[in-house]
Image (cartoon, protein in one colour):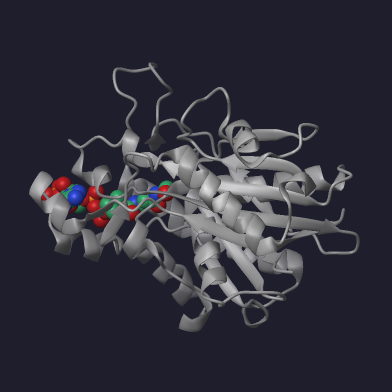
Length: 316
Ligand code: UT7
């Protein structure tokens, strides 16, 4: 199978910032508790014109521009999300219309919670191998602020909104992203009921148990991807982890002796943005010139489902 590489990345977050101090005025919490337990200081919440669809389209346009790829060259579009504006049409079909993507291509949403972007990258690699077009659009986007239970201080402080996008290219002879993925069907630890399925469609999470799952899953994924690709930590230019809790990232970084210049945390500014979190980091790294042509990234996601995944992806 031919592999994919990232040709351009983009991101968009709503301008409405909700700080820990704002939350102190609303619920029984403190800036000290939130920062020390999670590393989060701010999160951005959609409001007014800055809807899920608007930030998704903005991130995708930025990625297309960064890649120098025209909408008509796109061979497939996947939006990883659990919070699209509508279930039908899918966010990907809404995006198809907004961008003017071709009609003879698959556009669909993918739900793997916080691991969605990784599952989508792997799916895109498979799709582009069977497509006459060689570029794909992979987006991770969330509007989690609409599923927050403000009476649950253990979860309401965590989540933010945002969108990140990557234009990927598939070429003969390129290595596969060597994705490792897994799921452990669990309907208790992390839940977001479907529309009208329960009285309120809020996120619920048993945080401490999910934390324990994460600190096992993330190092395992790193090890698996290194083994599959025959690479060492020194061969990787950047490690990009799902931003759920700064302490989870610190633990894996310590375990693998990853130097500070090789990983990145933006959880302080955006909180946990689920499927958007990995592409938001990629977009920022791209913007700041920290990654570019030739960079090799090891990325790991984990979350509801429970789901986990890792991959090695290069920039072209
Ligand atoms: O993205 C998908 C994957 N998600 C994750 O990986 C999240 C993993 N879990 C976590 O990040 C952490 O478990 C949390 C940040 C969610 C919670 O941290 P924790 O250290 O596990 O705290 P806890 O839930 O055990 O709560 C400890 C204490 C409790 O008080 P008592 O019972 O010890 O008196 C809570 O009531 O902290 C209290 N607490 C709060 N206090 C102030 C819970 N939330 C808050 C709050 N402000 N917002």
